[in-house]
Amino acid sequence: MLKKLVGLGVVMGTSALLLSGCFSVFPSKMREETILVEKDKAKALEVDIELGVGEMNVSSGAKEWVEGKADYNIKKLAPHVSYDKHGDTGEIEIKHKGSTKLGLSKIKNTWAIQLNDDIPMDLSVETGAAIANLDLQGLQLEQLDIEAGVGELTVNLGGDWKKSFTTNIETGVGQTTVILPSKVGVKLTTEKGIGSSNVEGLVSKGNGVYVNDAYDKSDVVLEINSELGVGDITFKLDK
Image (cartoon, rainbow, N blue to C red):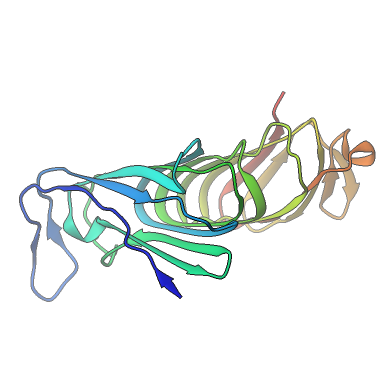
């Protein structure tokens, strides 16, 4: 196992003060922290991103394996980034250093993360009370798993994909929008909860299964499995 040092540049403000015996904290000045995982000889990546509270934007375009920054005003919300390499696979984990059970309305926490699009990748994203925008166009996804808690979630899977892969989306409370490709095949399987789902531009095959027009003639197919909680979810094509 090769343990890799992950660069974290920190611009520190006033330290957050903790109230003894509970999770409440006083907000401090904003801190800015660089998120970086350097490129090495790995041939595939497994990326796990967990945002407990705040806002997050994830996209492609990184020259290294991961590039980005976090802006936050509570020390517990500082991102912890780890990297292990097992054989040819690099394993990346990005999550909070401390508890996110803060119960404070004045929390400010924003992550902007870019992922490398030159390498095959299994991507897992989990959010708690958060607004998340995942623009995943251009990545070489092999597997995508998303679990959302409370808040808003947008997932952009539009574009022209070169390989088939499976996506599992589990939503909680809030509004979710999933943009699907029209140039390659899509098979969507939905499992409804208490909330409502809206499927635009796809053809129903019954029993919660929908396909797009390219499904029967495309060698590349995205299989989307969706489990809906209390909130609302909308699926629509990229045109």
